[in-house]
Length: 244
Length: 328
Image (cartoon, rainbow over all chains, first blue to last red; front, side, top):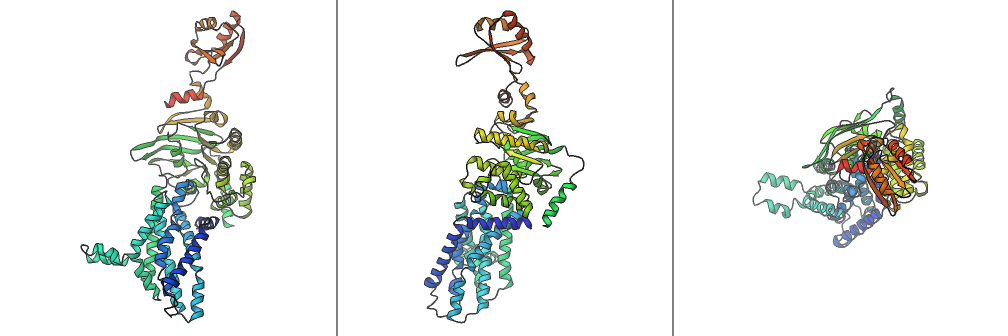
């Protein structure tokens, strides 16, 4: 527990010692604003809710979360610090959790800085703040799922660009697995059971369910399971690949 | 504070009998696919010893060190560090080791201060205890002047010292240093070697190197490894004694080298006489038969023949020559 906390603090601080944190947060906020107001027609809809804001989160995350996750292990492997890090008296689990939670906390900070949207909608009308809170939680869970995928894939390579591209592609498949883009490949030949399983893995479907305002247990459990699964994979990959 | 408590508890709970054998490496083996990188290497290191780990590049030195420090899992065999098995109980073993990996990696965007604070925290030190330990490590490695600069902006020598400070911070019983002086200038090398010698009495130290002068300078014992196999385990003096030059006598005369050469060859203990000509500085190198001491015979001959001697010295043997013979 203690070493997880120490690693968490170091990792989180490391985002802010480089320009990465500031670049990421500014771009995240600008893009969230642009998508909400111009593409999502926030004002023209005439409705006091944040649906146009949350609707674009999966697509925003698709680009930005892999950028956050790509350095987690690839950078340590490239610079050789992984050898120092993993010969300290820490367990692989503490290392994996510390890094993941630091990245997730950073994503949470970026997400929390979107509070002006919430203030705006409350000034303009009377939104259902319960729905908004549920959407924020859902968005954070989805960011965590994207990050866990990115963390695991980052451990596979020393090259951060490869980590970025592979993570973005994998996250894309997970995001749209309920849509014809993915299911179109399967329907001609796969059994219905498999198609149902693949469709149920869709981040979009689960996120949309949460955005409707109720955090249903299965949707939350889905994201937490994805995180747990990929963090486990992350630990296995680190163990196998660390010395390559 | 609870952690501080457990840290201080460690000292009395250490075995009453001083543990002589601090590192025991047993049949350590590592395969990478079809390549056998380290092949059943066994040795042990006791407190007070500085073990020089020698071998050509790619011999398996770093791989062996990575296994002892728990970074790389052995394919077979294990290493026991202060009673803790690195395979069975890696965290306990890692607590007892200070490790400087090859190239002294450190987080480039951190300053030495924040980096050492991180190391102190992860080793369970907080507050005044952490500060005291950081100050001591910084003083030992003379880092005070660069504490607030990002590590990526530091010179190679300072980076190496940051790595050493990190390894020394918890005052470990076992120090494993992978090429600690590689890339340093002669003054910095001297400083690091002085530090290693100062630490030696109370610790077991393993340093890998391909600089043989370093073995002479700091090591009490040397092991030679090539192609993953342990080829020699001896003191530097014993190793040097295997040299063909061991007990050879170097004679430098004012004149008459030709005549002297013929006379020296006739001595019963002499195997051969070689001529040395270093940019006009001529001398004869008298090689003994079977490494016996021939300096007495040679000086007797010099005296009776009445040669004008400019210099006469006995060779101890050269490590580089032994190294080449063993690892060729």
